[in-house]
Length: 276
Image (cartoon, rainbow, N blue to C red; front, side, top):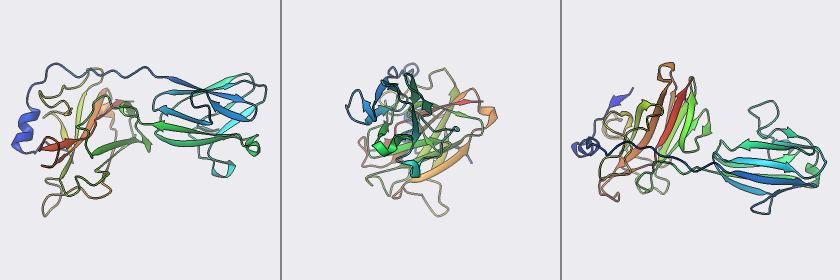
């Protein structure tokens, strides 16, 4: 169940300080990375190898430089082909003299191969890095990952449709904040309005007193506070039709005197545009 903020007075006071204007972040222009397909090789034009490293949200273009027909499939080999989201594969088919593009919409490492020419060693790898979050947290050992229907959100602003399962995972990867109570906050605002600004003096806070608490380590356990444990916490929810047209901002924090400011550490925030 969602509950309104029930935080120490200090935190409530900070979040209630008026901000100057609204946050209206803009991301960098999405780039296109070219992979030349020539002979029996995939050659990334930047790395000069068969490994292409991109940022989530950027585009990869395979450009055929010969007359062979190729079938690029998802997986390290025919035995490990990954089930696709469409009838062919994540990357699809293309023939001689054409090109094919794919927008990297999932964080991770993805091997691929050419089905007809796998025996010739025609394989490649795509490494998709998280996009820089447009609203950064305090930069400490406390992270928030958001997945929509099992796919890791790129960061910044992504979308989730009605019925989508949104999963949140927050933790202290190096264990710095294990043993301290964590909080996961969510705030709704009309899509396109830019969202709330940060309180004066706290540029890493991107939620306000209008937020809901999805997880409150101060109140979660029946016999006391729930503290951050190794491996962190996972929470799940489903997008409701009555939320369409809103943007959901998610940000996690942990209350700890060892934080840089002596009060709390904040994760980067994620914005999800909720669509039909």
